[in-house]
Image (tube, rainbow, N blue to C red; front, side, top):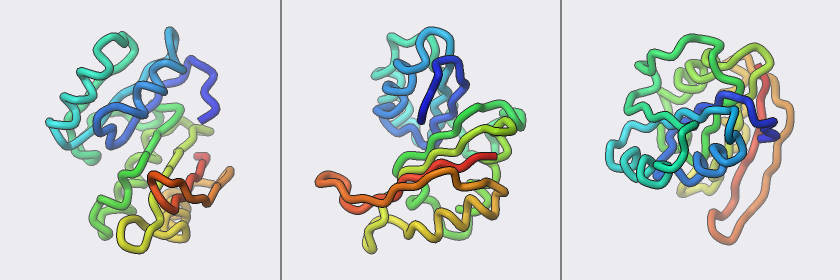
Amino acid sequence: MNLTGNERVLDFGCGGGGCAKIIAQALWPQGYVTCVDTSKYWLNKAKKRLCKFSNVGFLFADVSRLGIPEGFYDVVSIHFVLHDIERPKRSETVKILADKLKEGGRLVIKERTGKKHGMQAEEIEKLAKLAHLRRERRQIGKSLYHGPFYKGCFVK
């Protein structure tokens, strides 16, 4: 994510807070990470994992009801979540998240690309383009644990 340490980061679909913990450490003590999830179960797991960090906040909400002003975040992180959103709602979701970015802010997406579980790189890039984001870089790879994946960084 190339964080400098003073950014505001939105971790969309934070799950148990694994990525948020890494982000919170990188942002300590000046930056701030907001963890968002629609599952109370996973959000509670994240709260337990991140309880020692004073630079982390939590929101239990659907992306369309976040109540966050536009242009508020420097970075939005989506880590293995987008493929779980219903296909018709993906474009709207990415657009809403892009709107939360400051001008020059970055949307960072890491997503599985397996045929049975994931989505294709072309679809991810199309969603970003529809949200008026410019691709800065991308990586297509494969890991033993996650299988094939796409990682992209898009700029507002």
